[in-house]
Image (cartoon, rainbow, N blue to C red; front, side, top):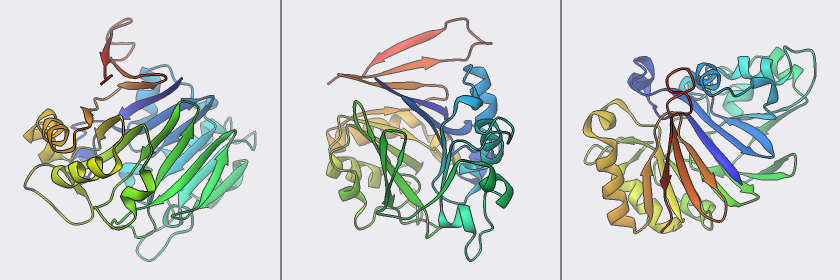
Length: 279
């Protein structure tokens, strides 16, 4: 069984500034524990769900925008037990690790030095964390070195496309994945360059053909227009099963794919609701 927990489902400048949705990234548990794109609120929402940062095996940063890396250095501190143990893996785009034109590194040289292994992820490269193979996939975004990720999990492949517009090679990189996680920043009839809008997300979902599409990384306008409205459009247009993620939701991938909502331990003791996503 593989689980993917959404520690935040917001994205973009203003949704992040005002935290209309949390922006803590994704936490994947498949024997190894991976924290992907830990933006602002990552640590707070880990605390709400009793997820221990010291048990994280890898921190992955898809590109060098703060809604994807703001809590990364503290996650590295947790993963390395305060820097006392050189353990864990840090993976980031070239911009996040080294800095590129217009971008300073997202993670300091000190924090890169205290992990067990630091990897610069380039599109179309492959690396491993424990027994899990992970492919870095291409994107077309404002950070030209940004990547997505395809995780070869025990229950099948899970793809995270990251921030991108629809471009050459993106659908091909994710075909065969059981679960396709799409960062959909803009709603219907509101396309902007370098980000997925609802219409492009529908096209990508149809081309990839996963069992389930999970939408996340919602911008301010999309939240106001209604996330479920976007999910219904994508489902009708693509033929795929689509769900709009919520903060603190967990998607469990086994023989079937199911989602569980949680409002956090301090709000509701054991307050969870299962959503059956089987076709």
